[in-house]
Structures are given as C-alpha cells and as structure tokens.
Length: 239
Image (cartoon, rainbow, N blue to C red):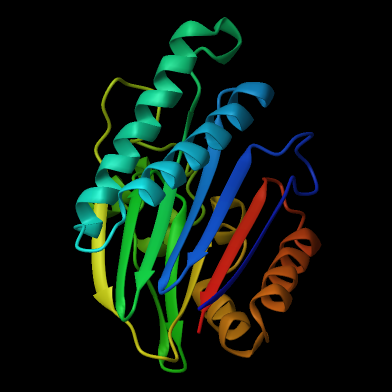
C-alpha cells in the first residue's frame, strides 16, 4: 500500500486548523484527517491532539487478532477525552473540537470511522462512492427529505456539524467496513476540498491523476484555483 497526504491553509484563512497522520506498518495502513474548530490556536490544537492520540491508540492496540472496529472506536473515544480535557483545563482552548475521519486497511479488509463532515471516498475505474456519512445539519435535512442533495451543496450554513470530537465528554462515531480490490483507491479529505470538487471531478483525478503525491498536489491546485476559502487537506491511499 502507498499513501501521501498534504494540508494547506487555503487562499483565505490566516491559519491551518486541519491535521493528518499516516502510518504504514507491514500489511497495515492507517490514515486519519481532522478539521479543527474553535478559533485559530484552539482549532489547530484540537485537530493535532485528536490525530496524535487516535494514531497512538490504534498503533498500541492493533495487534494480531484485535477487532479493528473495536480498536478504532476506542481510539476515537481516547481522542475525544484528550481534546475535551484540554478544552476544560486551558481557557485559550475552551469550546474547541474537531472532526475526525480515519481509514484502516489490513490485507483486503477496509475499515473507516467518522465523526463530523470530513470524508472518505472510495474509487475505481467504475465509479466513486462516499464510505462515510456526514454528521451535519444539511445531511440531517436531506435524510428528512427537506433538501435535495443538490440543494444541500449550496445551502447556507452547510458546514454546521452535529457531532464533533472534544466538545462533549462522550462522542458517538460511525464505523464502516468493506472489502477492496487491487484497483481501489481511497481519498480522505476535509470539507475544504469536498466543498469545491464534485464526485466526478474527484473520481477523474483519483483514477487519472498519477501517483498519490501527484494526485494530492493536483487536487490542492484545483482547490486553490477555485478560491480555497477553507483549509484543504487530502490523503490518497492506493496499492
């Protein structure tokens, strides 16, 4: 497995509140993307803590025979506890939180976990699909039939999330499981990228964009050319 990631503050924001981590160890690949909130220093702190604690917890517990879904859930809980405790003990971090989306690949088994609206896409030559489900106000409205998927793309306040890591003592995450083929690729990204590129554009870049580094840099270039009003983070995983 190969992976490459990058993160950028974008063209408008004065600071970058996104973070990511990648771990490749034997037949195991683990990647996580977090998009912080709560002010310049606090948002960056939240995403950095969440990424670091999540990865450390997974690396410690993902031994042979471990249930990967249980490990990822536990790692999200540890990340939530760490961010929440920092927010409670440091006035400069009061109210901070972060999204968290992570991918674990072991052999042909693929697992994803998500809190918030950072996403994971799976793509091959036949198409693209979201592995994760946004925890956002607009997604809730779409599920209730109050908005169409197309209306949701332009709805005011579309970035308001309904779940976050670190804002409460406990957090609920969603876990997804699938099997992969050799042609499957996976993109983890913050909403600074997914808000600017449609599914078919992402599919084209993932399938035809070259190696992971070239593809990620191309995605960032497209986002920057479109004004990049938010931080942009992308991690691409493939064979």
